[in-house]
Length: 211
Image (cartoon, rainbow, N blue to C red; front, top):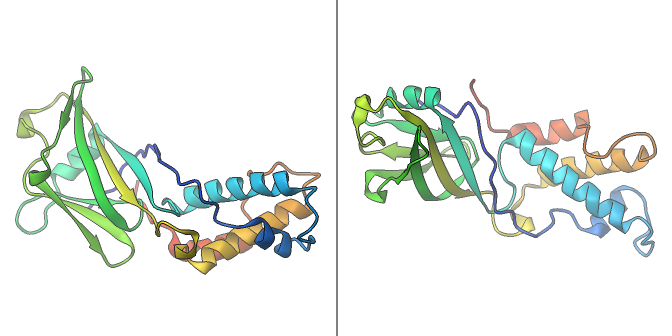
């Protein structure tokens, strides 16, 4: 049984690279490149569009370290999963998996236990997602460990290290969104709306979740 977390903590190490340049944003908004009056506004809109896009997609755009949180109830579901050999499998919701930086269990008293790397391995599969295959239960006391509160998994993922790795459809959606914000900049708050054109561009890349 493959599951995804009921709650995700986006504790990210976000690259400083921007997805869209000032020139690209000005072009879609029909603003002359030499006019710098709204450069600060374009910079804020680019960051807001990126944040909305990553939240909508459920994945970071550039290579980032993300920390996922799994509640006790989702852990119970994980314990029932198997790959045919009886070992639990975990689908990661953050897109294509690059590497697993660490897995930590936390009990009700806040005591952390780092899972030995020899007890699990990662696998990237079709559909731009990653999976963790546990060679045995991730909990030291097996089914008797009723006090477990959470499982934290730190992974590295994203489309790549540079902006050119981000799919053109995703960039196009960000441009559509910024053009709409810029056109209506006097009567709406930046970062609060996603246009239908942006959703159309982003939807094919969205990670599906099950509650």
